[in-house]
Image 1 (cartoon, rainbow, N blue to C red):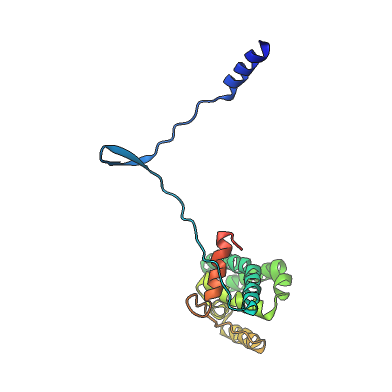
Image 2: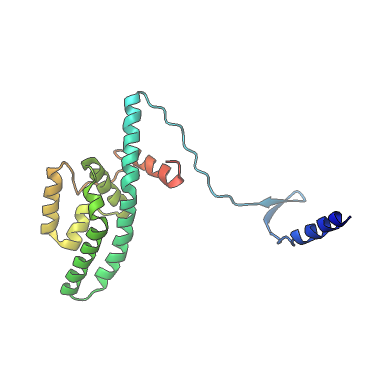
Length: 189
């Protein structure tokens, strides 16, 4: 009897008043049909590769994109932050000092990791920076450091088979990279 009484008392405390949720609805023929907006769910087709070699090539590209994509996102975020401060400064000397401080901060934080990138990963990073900032790496260097510096770094990049003026083309040339980024953002890869 005591156990039964305790079960009723515990059950009474466990139940709490439920909050009321209102849904929008549509009246149709005298009935009210609830209307709920759902988040879109991405659906990706399963890739079928003609050969094992093409499949390995795709997954190598996917691992490289997954490695450098966070750097491109961070570069876009930092560019927005630094650009606002850079443009707000009045004198050329202040801008130059600020740019040196920002460059030192970036090299201290990411320099070692970026130096370890392979040439192909660097090529992908250049394209992804263009994708995220809407400016090529050459344009960014030219705007911030000047034309001579941009020309110098373009020459160094060309020695290693890269091009700082490379633009991101999600429709043709970089279609697989764009697909991989969509997979990364959806949490599939």
